[in-house]
Length: 67
Image (cartoon, rainbow, N blue to C red; front, side):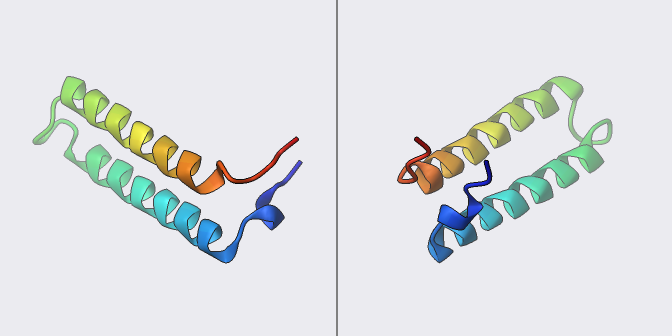
């Protein structure tokens, strides 16, 4: 079920900003791998970026009742 319609305008905006920020970070990180960032450091950074994205989703979507 698509709950997107249940999001307020502010929540939609927060999710969209989080998605764009995550996409930008991953794209920049991909460009840096092998040049200035090791694979291990890139993996750590990606893990941190995923955690940040998850936190934003949780904050934005927690008020929605999916039940």
